[in-house]
Amino acid sequence: MTDRPATYEQAKAARDDVVAVSMICGAREGCVPRSLATVLLCRLYHDTTPTWCVGCRRVPPFGAHAWVQADDIAVDEATHRTISARCSRCHDADGAHRAGGESHAVPSAAQ
Image (cartoon, rainbow, N blue to C red; front, side):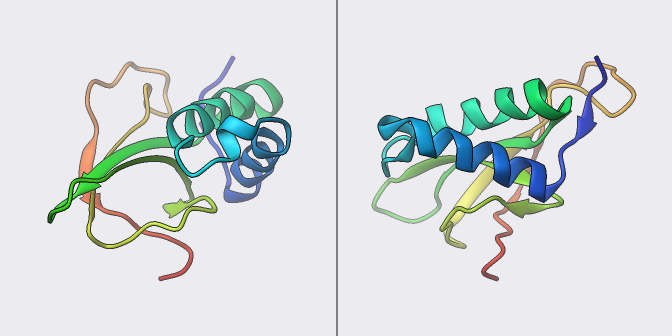
């Protein structure tokens, strides 16, 4: 099994499938199970992995969100620039384990 980065189209197809079969994952509060299920489905269907991200609002009130990114774009998520993200892939492209991730502002297709 390889660990190639998922394309936006692959990640979107997996996310669409997850949302179509799960009311919990389709709900606004279902971001964690939705994003994790999307990552797992990409690995199962395409042998690829999108980048899993989690972040919180930089200014009050507190708000947190989890999503996936592919091609450096948040996949079908209405994210906002006030979210500070921590994004991580479990392994580098060569298969070596990578601890942690990088922090950055959230890029989305709407920007």
